[in-house]
Length: 451
Image (cartoon, rainbow, N blue to C red; front, side, top):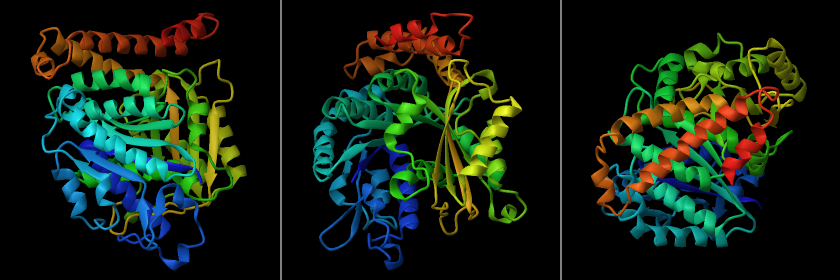
């Protein structure tokens, strides 16, 4: 069996994790106490994500960790409190206070060994561990500082295992903390080295998607996280269900990451549709394929028209046949509004899974017979880094708030080093977007930056 361990770090990671496991349980017919409903007993593929206990209960292969207890306490007292193993829910007593340095150097260090011990125990119970899914935000203290510290240790302890990172990036317009730009630049600096693939999420983009498509006037984190859970479910469906054309976890890296540093991916999902509108929509394979390429359906704020695609992975699920997929993708290519770099002629990787999407009872999304999740590596993602760099520069020019980081044992030189690394990353994206005829040294110059 090819098992996956999910690690949920900080408030964002834990709350996304809660939404994901709720959806996985509904998809596999697992009750909130971990029992399996009889009609789902035939399919055992889900044991990649769940382990079976001696009394026949199914327990998520997951770790929840936060430096303060309140968010994990909500999970422990929530409807799925009996599902999770209590030893795999790790909390500290002191918050990281939106400070990367506290999460990485002081408060976070104390929780590192207990967390690694639990990960080792989970890994030892796997017959063929395939990799890790790590969920966190890059703007807070625990998600950025402790999240990247954990990734760093995982890359040392499990260098051959895939590490897929789901990271919530700061929104362009509204912010949850003043020092978000510092935390984000410092953690991106670490993600460049220690994560294999990063799936970028942005609360503002998802918030607007919920308002526009689901007619929720004021979406809360539960609304946002349930939509994120649908994306992650589509992405992992091929690991948990049988399918006509399944995509393995390693295939994301092989097909979507042309150079080691260029591993920050955009994601998009369709259909995002409310129950009262579902009957009036044409949800054909061609329609879904067109929809995921629209800017307003992206889960991160950037404009794909300003960049070029290097690779696209289309994850279809439900009532989908390969001939419809081929026809839909041919139409997208022929329409000419999806531009690829000239050195990547094929561009598309497709996965088809027979399991239709499941919706949470009483949730916002309508039940549908088919859905599509798009993952794309596009040079347009450099807009996200450019915005962060600009905000970072404004504050760092005055050395504002820097003393809080230095006081936790961090050296000021790490700010400069991280900022320079992001400048190099922006340049890498500019290089790969150049036409081969314009600059024959594109590949070699980007590769030089990796050495």
